[in-house]
Amino acid sequence: MLLIGPGRVITRDSSMPFLEHGGVAVSGDLIVEVGEWSALQSKYPGAEILNAHGGVIMPGLINTHEHIYSAMARGLSVKGYHPKGFLDILEGMWWNIDRHLTLEQTRLSAMTTLIDCVKNGVTTVFDHHASFYHIPDSLFAIEEAGKAVGIRRCLCYEVSDRDGMDKAKEGVLENQRFIRYALEDDSDMVKGMMGVHASFTVSDHTFALMAEHKPEEVGYHIHVAEGAYDLEHCQKTYGKTLVERLRDLGVLGEKTLAVHCIYINEEEMDILKSTGTMVVHNPESNMGNACGCPPTMKLVEKGVLTGLGTDGYTHDMLESWKVANILHKHHLKDPNAAWVEVPQMLFDGNAAIAGRYFSTPLGALKTGYGADIIVTDYIPNTPMDEGNCNSHILFGMTGRSTIHTVCAGKVLMRDRALTFCDEEQVNAHVRESAASLWHSING
Ligand SMILES: [Zn+2]
Image (cartoon, rainbow, N blue to C red; front, side, top):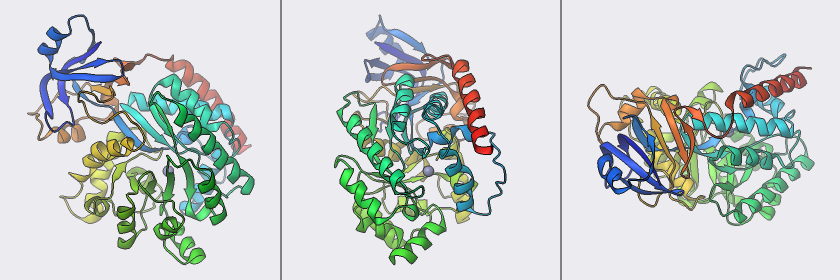
């Protein structure tokens, strides 16, 4: 038995949304009780205590779109790289990195990214991986890191024809092998999906190959309309819009994640809604790549299940929230926009998306839910209650406010110290490996 408290508890459980002086009782990998701290202490006298020091206790955060493979880009300067647009960014930076990543570099990228997730209070990650230099076993290299770190993960390889049909097939087979592995695993810590890069780099032939090799229990994880080129290419080549093409190929559905959805029209939004397809918004990445602002508020209004991700730009979900909050106000010239929608995407949307893969209920502090719990060091300087706690998180915390991270009942970080590895030792390996990757890229 583990007792986490005392602190201000934000439960995301509508029957008891906020406790001023509360705690959470954990047994095994589940929450057994949430309540007043004094009552929990007398009820569970022998329990181990994780002292929350009066901070804020919340459900672990969920990131529904990550890119582990981009970890070693930090600080990298590619010779001759002066992008004029999104395709140049892909070709010159991201595809360049993934064409050089060795298996060990993939594993180390996963270690360092997942460590950063834990430090930012993220306990569940949906990753979209690319390492065209070495595809076979790349998801298993990430899985090795995932197991070592101990957070929940849903992995896939981004299939693409961009490096030829042999590589496309290798990607499909890697997904199939990993999905089967994850389906056989009963820990509820690992899941798999059929990853796809984007419509403009994948032929009908490769989509058919994916459909043939995809176990029916899972869906696709694909970038949709991230840049205008994706739409232009689709209209020119197939005579239809992106969402229409994906619908006709049987890609859409309740298990499929359509990421970005910037250049889609009203009719396509209705198709996403009617097929139950999930959408993930990544505000910082869209702005950083000068891709544009997606119609996210409209998607939420239409009832499309929409979540929030980071696209590898950051691993801090609260930073992603902060940027989405101002992006949509700025873009729509509406100071009322995004107050409700973005926290709804981060907390309800991401939990619902996770719920389509993980059996354990996640995203709330509630009896029977997965014990994925974080504590931050935030002490409010204005009154805080169930009605304004989102404002306190948005303006008062960052991911790095997290002091303890617990996933499936296991303490992964205690008082900002990782429990599962020597962080500096990992960093030293990653720095050395990144230097060698940069050398292989720049010659
Ligand atoms: Zn992405």
